[in-house]
Image (cartoon, rainbow, N blue to C red; front, side, top):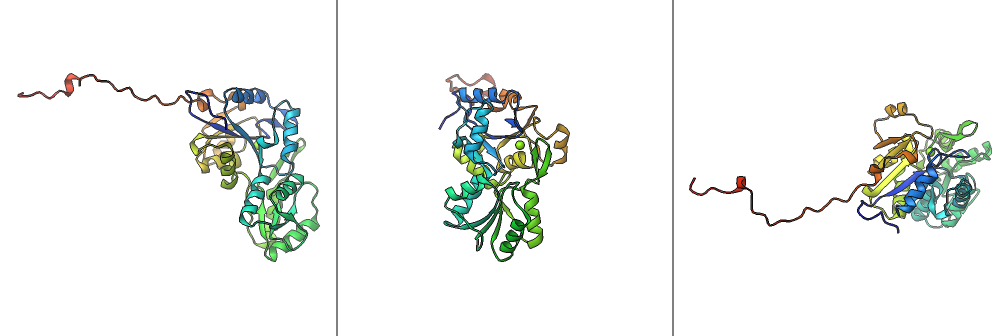
Length: 288
Ligand SMILES: [Mg+2]
């Protein structure tokens, strides 16, 4: 595990992707340079996304094509936190899944069988291929006792053409029909935030989350006690921050504009011990 440079306190970054590294198909100016700097300084980082659609391999390819070197292991998605959590709670479980490749492959890799009926869990992810029949089936399974799991509760997804309904919007429909509340494992879920921190081998006070969304990235960090930075290169403006009761520690126009003294903090110096005699004012006057 990489450690931070000598003379500086150890830190590591959890980096949201869309709105931080790239926006849609475009790389955000300076983000590749910032990552290069982190690698040079030996500061570890992990990409953290609430997109469950694509596999880590697909996402690493996207980053590489944009000029950002990345391996599949550098990416942590809400599909992974969901699959690991379910596998831990119920080994060899079955799941009815509304979602795409990224979610299906994470579930399979964690020993969860995707079924069409009789499921332990109904797992909802992002996707554009679902139809009303899938929703109807999910509603019946949850009504009959399957646990409703959301990979995230984002109500919208950004696209090049504007927003589209996100995972949270689909989940809301099933919640409304069944009267059951979904359990979410995407940002700001502490389950995902903690798993990501552990993967980097960091302590709470060494972890910095950078994102462009207040109610996922910043909220998750605030609840976990991580330091947080909001970048304005995504869909949040400075004015939007006022709508929330919590605040990021730092606001920057983009990732590469994060002030260095936010993440490069000198180690505290240990006070030198001296053998100097006490000062005159501390001397006890005898016979005064
Ligand atoms: Mg984002």
